Length: 336
Image (cartoon, rainbow, N blue to C red; front, top):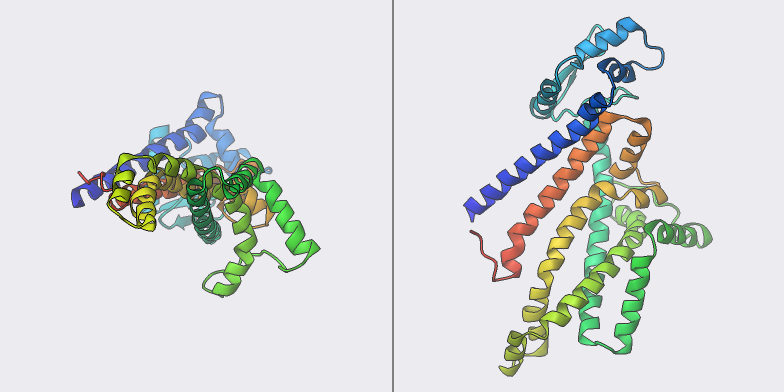
């Protein structure tokens, strides 16, 4: 098992390196190929009142006059050991992991990300707990009651959940429970370390809004998986042996049906941490998604690069965890 984990970790590191190279090339190489010069890139750090001398100094101090591969090496090196930037006569040290400085605010990107990661992570964790519990439970009940009224009603609600966009359900929930019937005075983020109860209470509406879509998807997937699994020969064999129906469903049926669900969950959860833009916007949460949208509007490349790499890290990490728990879910899977 140790060898398997080492191989998976090394593979994840290689994948992150490839993602960083591709992202760096998109933001710094492709514009060069399109005609953007190093002087134009340096001008974004100086501002509108730039003069040729200051632009030339920034271009030299930040290494924009160097070949792309040297710039990429300096960027990767900064992630591990930090880097020194000179925007004027004095150098500024950017501590590791260094994602550079914002074009607009001239502040380090990583401290800004660390302020927003807990918001996005809290949003993703709470919503994931809700959609897994309700989605899987609804799917199992629908599969066991196929064709019954509860199955039809559950799948109708699931279809509505899949069809309705997140920004619509979020706006409706916000309008009803914050403004029409002010059960919640606000949905502003409260740090977990400050007050766990307020943390959960203020995030409950965003959790429900986000989980409504995903629980509908997971209910339909679980129902389809359970219907297929419960028709297998080993399920009939388990019943013929006299096992209780609960044991047949949970230990033999659900366990096999959960394998594809776990795979999808790893992708969804990892992606959601950096891309819950609509939910963060509707409920005015200052997470990574909202931060990335503002950076894209401002053409702030260091922030976009930082958000992309952080999101890629969570996706790769979650899929690594999924690979490690496969054997616990499906006995047919072995570490090798």
